[in-house]
Image (cartoon, rainbow, N blue to C red):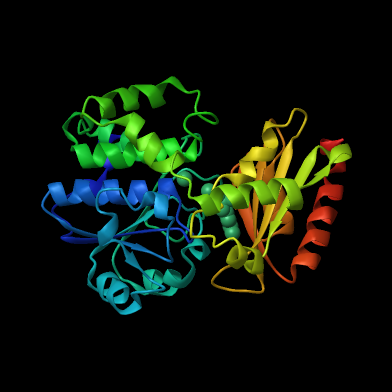
Length: 338
Ligand code: 5GP
Ligand code: MN
C-alpha cells in the first residue's frame, strides 16, 4: 500500500461518512468502526457508525458506543444516514451479505465504498477500493497500518487508541491466538503511548461476567457439551428456551465456544445456538487449534466462512437437525480429525 493510493483519506472528496460493519458485531467490528469515526471527526468530517443489529453489553463502555445506530432498532435513522453519506466505509467483513439488513441500503447508495478488512478471499466487486490484509489479526490492525503509513499513528486520540486496542484484543482472545507477528506490538506500543489503560480494557471486556453468564457457562459445559473423543471435537448447543431459563443477556455466550479447546487433544469446538432474533435459524460458531480449517467447513456445510481457526455460519432447521448436520460435517472431515 503506497501512501499515494490512500484516497480514503483524501479529505477534499467527502464530508459525511457512514461506517458499517457485520451482523452480530464483535469487539473488532465495533472498536474498528468507532476508531474510524473518531479519526474522521478529528479531521473535521461527519461520521456515523451504523450496525446491522445489536452488539454485546460488554462493548457498551467503549467511547462513542452510545452514538451507534442499530438498524434493527433505528431503521429510519440508519437509512437517512446512509442516504446522506458521500463516503461509505465497510469494516471487518468480506462479502456484502454479512451486512444482513443493511445490505440493500448500503448497496443502493451512490457514495464510493471502501473496504477495510482482514478476512480471506474478499469479494472484489462490492467496494471501489479495498484495504484487505488477511494476515492481519483484526480489522483494527489494518487501520493501524493505514494510519502508520499516513504518519498519523503518533497523533491519534486517546479514544481512537482505546477503540483500536480493544478491537485487536477481542479478535485475538487477548493476544492468545493469531497474534505472533511483531508488528502488532509495535502498533500497540504506539497505542499505549496515547495513555490507554490496557488492563482496564481487558477487565471491561473479559472480567465482567454476570451471575447468569457464569451459571449458563457451568450448565453448557456440564450438561450440554458432547465430546466426540474419536474426532477430537466438542459440540455445545443452546436453545432460546434455555436462554430464557438462564436469563441470558446479549453477549453472555461470548467466548464459551473457546473453552472446550482447553482440553488436551481437542481440535475442533462447535457451538450451535438458536438465533434470538430469528427463531428457526441456528447459528454456528466454530473454533479450532492447529491446521483444522474452520472457514472451509463453515463454507461447505453451513453457508458461512471466516478465518482458519474461527468461523461461523447458519442453518435453517431445528436444533436436532442442526446437530445431525454438524455430525455429518465432522464425518466429512474425519481424516483430519482422527
Ligand atoms: P463467531 O463465532 O464469533 O460468530 O464468528 C467467528 C468468525 O467467523 C467471525 O469473525 C467471522 O469472521 C466469521 N463468521 C461468523 N459467521 C459467519 C457467517 O455467517 N458468514 C461468514 N462468511 N463468516 C462468518
Ligand atoms: Mn475482525
